[in-house]
Length: 83
Image (cartoon, rainbow, N blue to C red; front, side, top):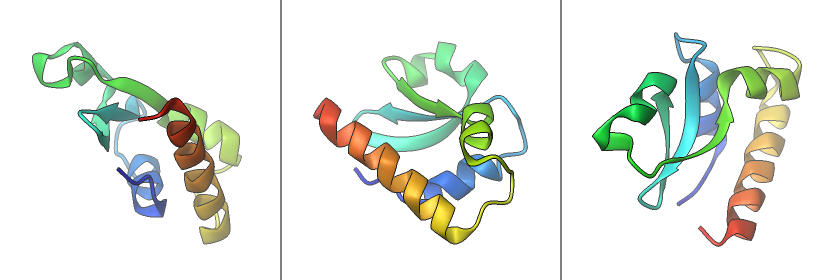
């Protein structure tokens, strides 16, 4: 499982503010917060919400360097969890 800039961009570009990046069955994916209560997302671990991501970046239109740095930070956190 790889958290890359494309996933971070997908989260930033999500039409809903209630979107989150989760780990589910060994994969990182972007889902609506409401979907976390569904059987399909049972067991998902939330890494970061869109709102938290925007807060950390300070903008909804970050540079590629900022996206790369944040995706590397998220990947490092996941690696430390042993996921």
